[in-house]
Amino acid sequence: MRREVLEIPQAVARLLEQSSGAIAQAGAALKAADPRVLVTVARGSSDHAAAFLKYAVELTLGVPVASLGPSIASIYEAPLKLAGAASIAISQSGKSPDIVAMADAVRRAGAVSVTLTNTADSPLARAADHAIDIAAGPEKSVAATKTYVNSAVAGLGILAHWADDKALHAALTELPRHLEQAVACDWTAFADALEGTSSVFILGRGPALAIANEVALKFKETCSVHAEAYSGAEVMHGPMALVGPGFPVLALAARDKALSSIIGAADALAGKGAAAFITADGAAKATRLPFAATGHPLTDPLVLIASFYAFVEAFARRRGLNPDEPRNLRKVTETV
Image (cartoon, rainbow, N blue to C red):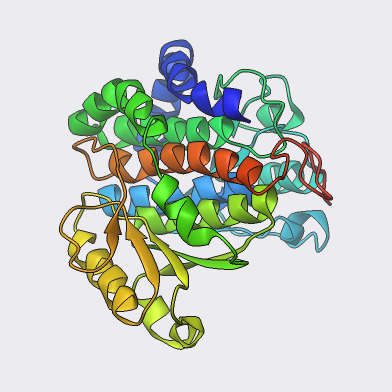
């Protein structure tokens, strides 16, 4: 896992070079189709990448994005009405029967279909109008890292062409450099706060909330720590009841319009006694963690996951666990 985390900057650079043509074609197809809605098909870390792209598409183009439950096709065999829609299916292996079944179904239902997969000749790739090889290279760690980042980057590349967004194009070009900075960030102070705990809150707003969901999953997979992701607004309701002295909180802040909101949430929880940490400057009570700023509101939250991956791999080993062999898990999970 550590080796693959360190490969993330190179994996992204390879994606942007090798798959640029396919990404441009998919973006052009979506621009020509001008869909009224975009649907996504994915599970696990791939679904978290899809959630990240949901925010990116809605914020950039105003096109609503909905996640489809794969069982609608694979088990219930229910027909969908997707004329005038587009779809993005994401799977590292491209082999899970339920994901492939739904990708086939949305294409038959009339949607312009795009797939993102790390296995170019997979059944999922063959089920699409436009198949993007995310070019992450072999990923042997059970916990997905570089395939998650490359899936999200491939989606942003498609969006940049779809929206003809020159600023996003430029930000993606610079992304490998920022990812190098991100994986070098030292979050040891947060590890100290987690000693002796079995539960943690992860906060985010907008695209960073999608990143928070991925963070929570990796805590469970690699460290046997129960982690829950919440919106910085939602946590102030029912979940607040769990917060007491020393309760660990990680607030993922990006340099976007939600920055002041997430700082306010982290400070409020710190005021309740939580051990709150935040990836931002300007917090009055929460502890600052180092971060790599990219200068773009969509790539800025994405680099946070690279910092976290480097952190959580080391934290798992600190707890005496092997992050490469998580309990009860295997690399490819094929569900129906």
